[in-house]
Image (cartoon, rainbow, N blue to C red; front, side, top):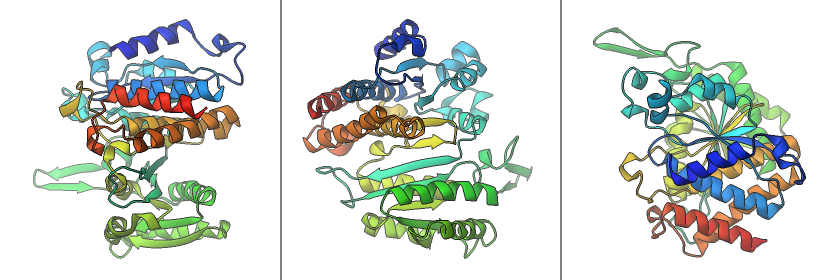
Length: 383
């Protein structure tokens, strides 16, 4: 556990629960901290640093951070990448931050099991994966002015780990034949469509449906058609739709023309990585995984083991994911201070990048800790 993790652990031990915030304005929250693998122990504490600064600046109570075991370190200490005790505690918390995992490097049998983020998503039915892509002024975006959100259905589609209740939707009847199932249901499409339409209504009122109904006529055709049906409930939102292959071209050429994009699981995963790079770097691509009851902040990128421990990782994706988590909580608890903290984080990140403080993937020289501290300082100046 690194120095920042130890600080989080001490604080959580000293302030066990909401009562520790007596006298502070508004409600107190308990948020889980799962650092994960690779660069996780660097970018997650960076996120905590910025969230603490923003909450203080907004006059919100301090968060009660609850560190929990996950990933390779949890295999070593608890015999599982996601211990049962972690899942039990997560259910008791208001929300949580999840760092990246490097499950491909786990020893067997853990490597062949559902990875940590997949385990948590499935356990809590986190059906909505919301992935914004927004360029920053002064940064190296491929398409300047990109400001879109990909709403990805997170529980079905063509990923084998999400298409069955138990086991995998991928199998081999013989050594030379591999088969994968793709599952699309009306219920799953309806609930993700509602999330997408509601988001579009709060933004610029435009929704794009992405599918491959010219080939996958029944599966992605059902996805497209159910989304179109839900449009009747949102006459104030304009809709269009594109095939997935055409959509990649449209993003590269005119990402700034799109607002909210809704699609199935695998298409959403691919498009959001592309959109992150178009906006400037995959290191700035945030996301939140949510249901109606639970939410998890998780950067869209991976664990980057090649730069782990070198203070090189861009923490923007994790920091912005943390801001999304605060916004999610604020909307459900009607917490004005929490919403203000999320707004301050967004402004603080943008202001820091605009001032010239950037990590190497964005053409700068700042390290992970330096960038996080710069954002925290910018937030204090905004107040």
